Image (tube, one colour):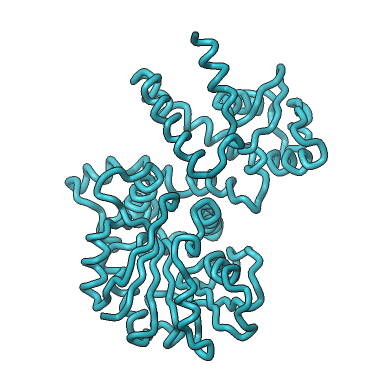
Length: 398
């Protein structure tokens, strides 16, 4: 019976499902199955001992340039097996064979490579994405090493030291500052490599999560716009993918339409690598400073307020409110609206990563309403989708 069950489980493939929501539902069922099958020892061992070696191995192979070479070679011979000697030949620096062998052995044991013979492996979709810069999967691993893992290692000690208070005060009570000596955003501005991995993981998340224009109906927004004025200001918009999504939904917008992506100068000039429509304009701007675009139809925040405690969000909201036209301008916030019960693991992972790295948080609907009401806004609607991690909160000046 066990062998038949193993065979059946091994036959399930991602391509078997008609929709991504079906695939996700089965994936979550598989997580629940694993939690029932594993012993407490196996669970504890996986959490604390499997992952450190895995992450180190993935990053070392990345640093040697092997993932990139493997991905390029796979385009010529898809799915081909590669020997240890071939992989060593792709390395950009000398590496002792047994060191690479030991790390690849562990990566394969956790099914991120396929071991097909002695010192011989085939790639997996994950390993090929590690070598494809446009997927930003490598940045997920790098950002973990740069930010999430050091902060996670420190968090329990930091909370114990501070009498288990919730960290919501960046200047005086911030886990990231405790680790690195500066708050998150000051540190990444001063360290471009760490800033780059952060921008990469945020872009990877944007690619993974549901496009906001599939959650929120943009037709009334555009139909009610005066196109002689700015249409859409993506505040803290990083790569500009959300603005591009709006344009993809409304491709007939004129050449002079006001579509603006704002972020800090180093993001606009250094980390912004996505190719955008020529109708989209990039603008260097700090959202704590006066907003230079007045009277736009929509101001848009995607995964921005959640990086900051309430007092800082109030500061950025004040800059937006001061330039909004009452009865015309909209503030759109695309972020997690935490349910009171049944939050997904992606929601909770984001929430705790924010606590650990930025003293930020994912907010419940009640928290959003309280925060926005206190700053003179009213929520018009909250658009949700059963497959979306985030919701679009439509806000007007009260």
